[in-house]
Length: 202
Image (cartoon, rainbow, N blue to C red; front, side, top):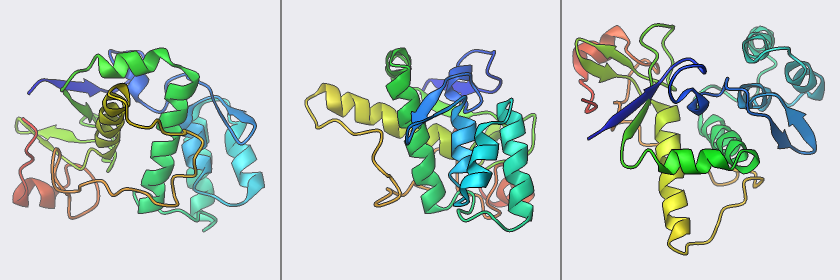
C-alpha cells in the first residue's frame, strides 16, 4: 500500500500538520492555525484560550498551553476521546476555510497517511520508524484518513457533515491497534512498544 508521511510544514504534505499557516474561524473568532485552536480547546478558561489564540506562532501557542497545563488548568487530557473529537473539529474547519485542501486530501488516494515524528519527541498523534518499521498510534494520520473516507461517501451522495458541529457530543473512537499500533505507554515508538508490538505499517 502506498504511504504518505509528513513532518515540517514547508515540506511535502506539510499542510497535513496543525502548524501549517491555515487560518480557521471558530465561534466567531479567527485562529491563525489549527494548532492554536486545538490547544485552546483543552481549556475552559476564556482568558487562557484568548492568550493561546493571540500567540505569535503555533509553537508559542503550544508552549503557552503546556505552561497552563502545569498549573492544572487543562480540562481535556491529551489523546482522550474529547481531545480526538476536538482534533476532528479543527481538521474539518481547516478544510472548510481552505477548500482546495479537500481536493489535495482526496488526491492522496488510498495511501496511508502518517505523521512522522521519528526526529522529534514521541507523540500519540504520529509514529516513528524504528528498524524499518513504524511504531506508534498515528492518531492524526488516522483522523485524516477517516476524513478522506467521509469525503468519498459524501461524493457518493451521503449527507454532508457540518464542520461547526460540537464533535465532543458523540465522538467516534479511533482504533488504537491498527495502522500504527497501540502503544502501551501512550506515545509512539516507546521501548515497550518496540519490544512487544510491531506495527502493521510497512
